[in-house]
Amino acid sequence: MRLRNIRGAKEQIASSPLVVQTPKDLKGKWYEKFGNQNPIYIEVGMGKGRFIKELARQNPQINYLGIEMYDSVLLRALQKAEQQESLSNLFFICMDARELPEVFAKGEVAKIYLNFSDPWPKDRHAKRRLTARQFLERYDQILVKDGEIEFKTDNRDLFEFSLAEGQHLPWQVKEHTFDLHGDERLNIGNVMTEYEEKFSLLGNPIHKMIIDREKSIK
Image (cartoon, rainbow, N blue to C red; front, side, top):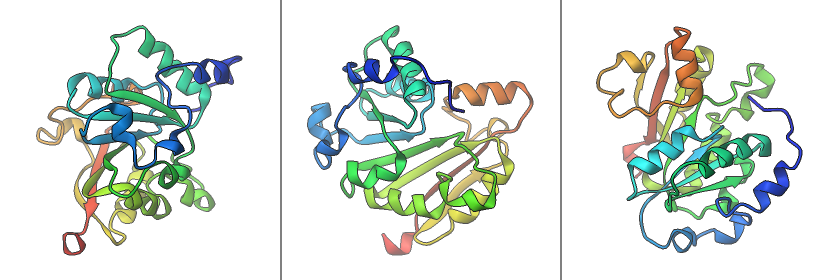
């Protein structure tokens, strides 16, 4: 959900050392930014950043990039990050997900997280959903050969749409559940987002799927 426009948000984002200001200049060179050869995981539509910040804290051997389109939302994530411990394996980008192939080279990203994305419920807006095949084609351009996409939502219609799109070549649905918190195996190590905690408290089941490329074309 988009927050109200916050005065001065663009200026604060532009001056933050946690935000990569010209990400397209780093295409194919992200390891230089992090100063190591560790795998790169990205979260597209990170919201206030709780999920990716916790992953970065738990896994210092992985590099993380939180991507958010709205500067008012990204600013909230920055404010929270500045109040917490500094993490050398985490940066943020303010950008539209449609530009991902312009920011990352082929095989530069190891995993993509999509959490509680905008469902865009009207059929005419289906191609805007982050799990639509138009976006899967973009992800295919930047992921490593055995890369994965993990998607969580409480929206049943969006999840069923995503399951269908996830079977669109060259992708396959590797695993899925309609009740993540009731699935002992898939819930192991689960890190909750702000929305996940909110919806769970309301009694909404959380759906999750993992997709990767068809084995036959790897």
